[in-house]
Image (tube, rainbow, N blue to C red; front, side):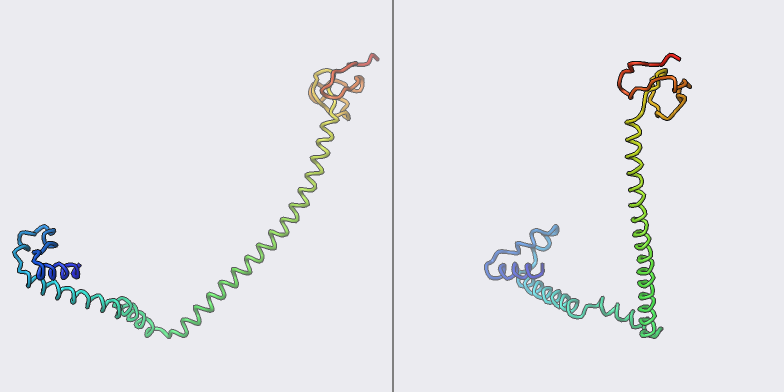
Length: 180
């Protein structure tokens, strides 16, 4: 911004355009009365001062110097090599513990996966058997509900079943009972 004011002051000094940037400020009536040569020298001085401050900050980084001072005070209180070695050792111990626990968990998951596969195989066999048994269900001649052909009595109505002829579920019974 100071360079822009210096450029405006040099144009005002050479061309005669009087302080065009200064008219943009809220107190422009006070700043318009400023002499062109004073405006030029003030803007040049301000440009160099601000450039110098920028260079000091950029090249000497006072924040880094402050952080280094704080760290040097901490390092004088403790032996930095002992602290670094202990810190590295504890970090390695934590990493070893984590890897060991992760290895145990991984083996447990592998064992459980193979057990689950075996259980799924058994469940598939049971489901196939149940589907087969469901297809073989017979209908009770008394209540009409599906029952296993191995039953002697209907579990729903209590009808004695060996005296009746069973028919597959879903088909119409041709003969419902035998006469003794």
